[in-house]
Length: 337
Image 1 (tube, one colour):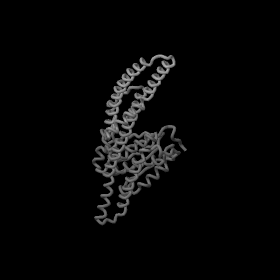
Image 2 (image 1 turned 90 degrees about the horizontal axis):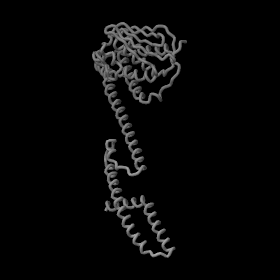
Image 3 (image 1 turned 90 degrees about the vertical axis):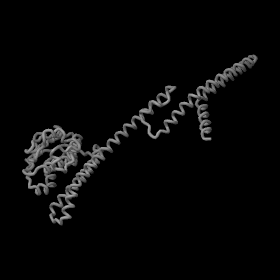
Image 4 (image 1 turned 120 degrees about the vertical axis):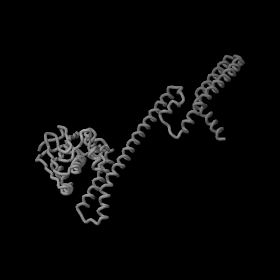
C-alpha cells in the first residue's frame, strides 16, 4: 500500500515537473485544430496526427519517467545510509541539466565542509582527551603526597600548603588549556611592566624556594612590553616553576637584555638529544622521566600561547650546569621607561 502511494506521488511529481511540456503539446494541437477549422479544412488528418504524436509523447514520457524513477531510487538508497561521506559522492545520479549539476556541486561542497568540521572536532576532542589523561596523571602527585601526609599524621603545615598550591596550579593549568581553543577572544593587549610581573610570580612561588633552599636573583631592569598580562604571566609561571622543579641546589637568575627576558637556573640540565623536543606536547625527556612527575604540558602550552602573543621562546641547556629559557619580544612591543 505504501509502495503504491509512493508511486502515485512520484508520478504526480513527474507530471508537475513536465507540466510545461504537456501544456505546450496541448496548446500546439489546439492551435492546429483551430487553424483547420477556420480554413474549413477536414480534421481527419489532424486526428491521425494527434493520435500518432500522442502515442509518441506517451512512449517518450514513459522512457523519461523510467529514468526519473531510477534517479529517485538512487537518492532513496543514499538517504537511507547511516553515514554519508565524500566517498559516496560517486553514487549520486548523473545530472541531466546544468541546474542539477550546480545543485550537486553545492551538495558536494556541503558534504566536504561537514567532513572537515567533523575532522577538526574529532582532532580537538582527541587533544582534549590526551590532555585530560596527562593532566590527571600530573595532579595525582600532590594528591598522593597530601594523602601520605594525612595518613602519617604529619603536622608540617608548609608541606601541606605547598601540595595544595600545586593542586591549585594544575587546576589553573586546566582552565587555561580550555580557554586556549578560543584564545584570540580572551586576549587583552596593553602595556605591561615586566619587573612587577616577575616579582609577583616569584612571590607566588616563594614557599618552594624556601622549601628547597634555593636563591633567586633578579637583575635591575625597567622595561615594558605590549602584551596580554594574564597569558604572559602563565608562560613565566610555567618556566619558573620548571626551573624550581629541576633545580636541587643553587638558584634562579632573571634578567632583561635588549628585547629578551632570560630565566636561568642551576638545575640538572637537559640532554642534547632532548633539546629539540622540549616544547612538544607530552614530551618529558630524560629529566622528566627521572622526575616521574612531568607530563610535558607546561612548556608545550607556553610555546603555543607565546606564538599567539608574538613572543619567540628558545631554550639552551647543559647537563649538570643548568638551563636557560629566553623570551624574545618583538622589537615594536617593548620600551624602556
